[in-house]
Amino acid sequence: MDGILLIDKPPGLTSHDVVRWIRKTLNIKRIGHGGTLDPAATGLLVVLVGSATKLFPYLSGMDKEYTGEVTVGVATDSADADGAITAEKTVEGPLVIDEALMELCGEREQVPPMYSAVKSSGKKLYELARRGVTVERTPRPITVYELERTSPVSYENGRARFSFRTRVSKGTYIRTLAVEIGERLGYPAYLSMLRRLTVGGFSLKKAHSLDEVARGDYRLLPLLSVFSENMVIQAGEKLARKARNGRALDAAEVGSGEPEIAIANREELIAIYKRKNGTYHAERVWN
Figure 1 (cartoon, rainbow, N blue to C red):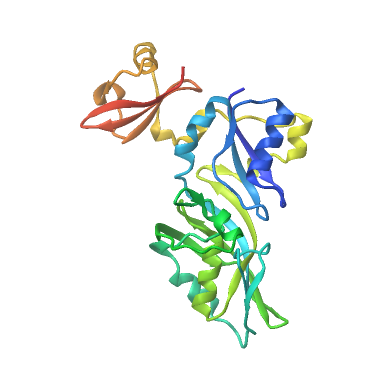
Figure 2 (figure 1 turned 45 degrees about the vertical axis):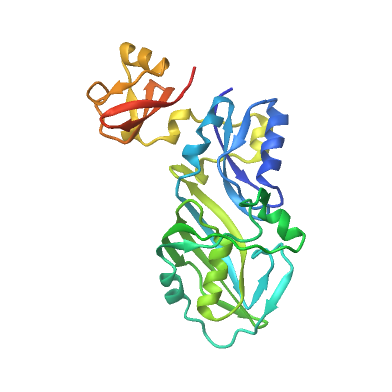
């Protein structure tokens, strides 16, 4: 069994929990996922089955789209609803939220949160955070392509809440983005809800619930669905044979100017090639 399984992750489960459940339910040995969702978050989890596990590096770099909710006036140690409260400040007067969101768009750097899987000296940050240890983290380049408010702002008990939608590059932490929104507004803040809508070209609209998977009511997408149409080269017999053997390919015989291509035979992914000095060299081959 090889392919890509789109799952609508329910709240309360880690991404690893979901993968482990699918492994047991479908009796699959090789399985992984293409990008973590926090336990409290819901939405699209891209699960890689069989030989599709080799595609992780290509999924991890994809843009992602989310909807969520920010609560202003209180902060937590994990920057989401699961954390312990660390700061509170009564929200007074109307907040100029849209301007703050616009300021956070574009290319910039972001410091990963302590509650993350980023490693420091071989230790995952969340392991250190659970022991009460805080370390310096290196800022990482990110891009926030879109960030907009999608609901009125509600004010209650000295706090403010609003919903948003955002599209971001790889490496962007939405929990940190919620904290940054609060900083722009002059208040503590945390991410009170998060739902992932897309990962690259994959959409939550085509995702399956765990109940559907348990009933056998699901469909695996082909490995080629990871790549855009302009990256996929449908190979003839000669080109396919060379690709299966991982041989270098001349750009002229490939007929592409893309920096990276996927050689295919109909829906079968044969190999991924990268271009260097006018020649394509095999990066991964599926045998």
